[in-house]
Amino acid sequence: IHSGAPSMNGLRAATTILALQLIWAFPISLMQNFYRACGRFSVSQWIVNITRVTIVAATGVTLVLGGGVKAVAWAQFVPGMVCGAIIFLVTRSTHPLLAAGVRYAELRAIKAMVRPGVLFGMIMLALSISQQGPILIISSTVGSVAVALFATSRTLINVVRQIDRKSVV
Image (cartoon, rainbow, N blue to C red; front, side):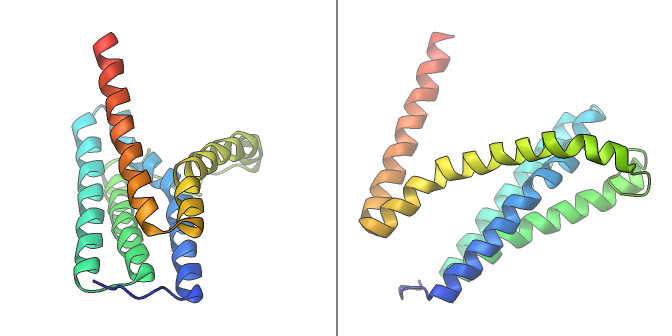
């Protein structure tokens, strides 16, 4: 496993790649939900599961092969984009009325959607900052051992919280 400290250029590249992943997350999710709109819930869930498993597998292979921060970022970005492209192509051929595109776009409708779209983008940004912000701060101030402890503790607490909510309901 790659144990050297990543370069600043590698960190910038990884941050850019992960930002692209964040930007494309909403449109890809929207395309995945086309199947839910057609009443094919299981297909939608399978797509999500296959995408996630592929990302985890690609990340694991990258780490085993000694990939650095940038390689891991690519390993998370590429499978999601490939799955998104496949979804786009399949949806376009099987459900042409639901296929994403700009052919029938109207400027008036685009203007009406900009403000709510920016607000939804802010939700995604806030979620990303609330999830990853503490880890970034801890890693830059205390170190990687503290990150591992914090991330594990947070996960265990969230699991207990979810179990507690289900027992109350």
